[in-house]
Image (cartoon, rainbow, N blue to C red; front, side, top):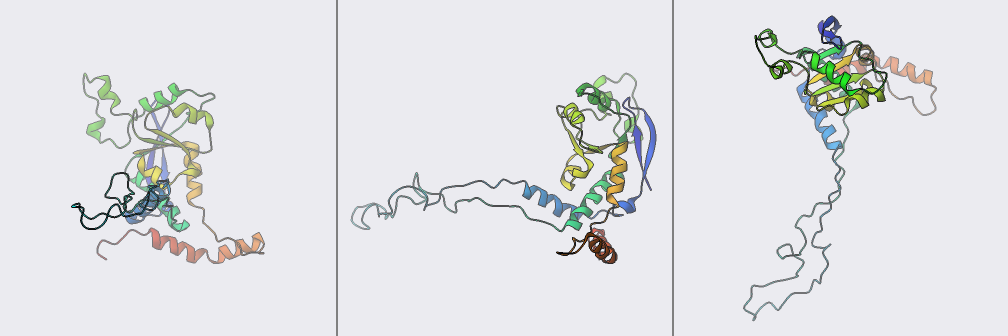
Length: 274
């Protein structure tokens, strides 16, 4: 079992939450994480570039002058890429870079990304940070008070006469942080959106890229409970056309063993000796 520290907004440690690695896949497959992150980056590409090629540039295709007798080097059309104002060679066109990876592999990668944060000591829980109205100062003060969870004992030791900047270097202030909420909360979002390096998201909207992009994962206590419940959910098959929901659930139940094995096969860490 892994433990995650729980802090209050004043930066005081008030407890711990236990995490079962088995619920998050039991291990980390770096190749799968790499593949899913590349998919997210490719899907974010706009791909609207459009460069004019030789066929798109205005101008005649007539030969500029005769082949011989002028003393000049031979020349063809003026739209060639060798001439000023001509078309671009191998011009780039609009392109859709997006592609998909199986849903079970994507879900397995999300669990692995979360597990990596828990294992590396880069995740923590905050309790009692409730906002009735947008207040950036409240969120900023909480981040300034909470110490970084991945500090060693020597790094966490407060030196005599250290400056304020040195003290803040041990906190989450101005760090790369992903804050997870149990539900969409516009008030919290408006409170944190102007803080540098902070990203706020509903735990249901987590993806592998956002989790790994931010250095620290900060969850509310309620968000951690929702996250634990979500990682235990199974992805069943869609019911066949014309089938009732009960029949679809029965089919998912009969294939649960095989689908679980598929996820474990995808999620299993690579054997270095194999």
